[in-house]
Image 1 (cartoon, rainbow, N blue to C red):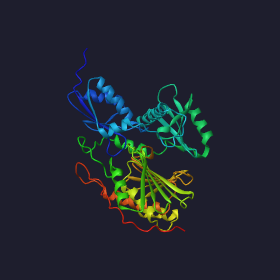
Image 2: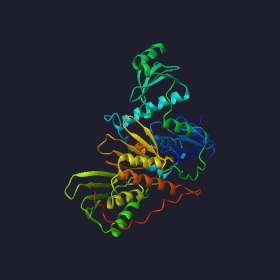
Image 3: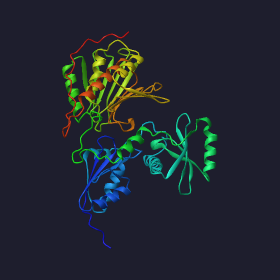
Length: 428
């Protein structure tokens, strides 16, 4: 029996409210056949012409690329939005991945297994009886309705959830779980993680307001456009004479402050928005030890970079970290404590501070987006204090000025004029 002609068009675009989830907009006489194929590839229907791929392992661009290739083989017409194509072409890695010995393909296999477990739980194929917190991870015991490994122990959350043991009977699995975790055992499944809640909301059946021209959401972080950093670099050193710059290599510009205690390095070859474009360091005197340093990626809004350089040019009196945290509270940032770090999130979700007090290199990280692992950009600092307070204030103002109006494409955040040079204050 011959196949029906594949007369359908599928357009793949990044979801505006949940990076990097993907929306598939279908049209054409045989779009039902295309939707059937997409469903088998992990997409779920959210409307008559839209489907969403939202994964717990954050690998949506990779699997969207595989889906587009397969649909093209079936004769369907596919279109991939340029922003999504950039994500597909960018090979990224998880930050602080707990299994560093894994190759990229092996990491995807771990994530795919975690996705299968997540889907089984969400669909009711895997019933969770008990859960516990072992001090570092969430663990659980559950049973499949069918299959060889029917009664299992689970370890971890989101993209790291794994099956660690299987048992012949439910009673055996539950008894062993009680023995291992004792008084920490709680009935039923653990509360949904933030990522699980977001995925369920995406798949709840509410399509985006417009699929033809997807607009940025209010929670989407401002991002520097290509060339913004180059223009800012030129304007900065043309107008502020207390900086001296030279370009020893074609790909790098070095700038030194007149105090000889601050050094800035800019990489002209940083192309992707998560490539490190700026390295800034301050020293204890012209030949002294390094006091702290920062790395800044290419997608970082220039307003934040300007805040750092202005601070270095005329630093205020040193503030203790506690006072900086108070400024986050006052600006509406909400803290969430974890065993090794505290995460401060702006009310809009567009900006996040992550504080790792025991880290020597990246003690503070300010990033845009809903996850540091897939951040749109990031500023990593080895110290906080008064600079942290100024960055928090600037970030809060930036997200307020960049909230999009109801137009097809929101205007970028206005660029502030470069500050008038101020005398560099002495630190004591």
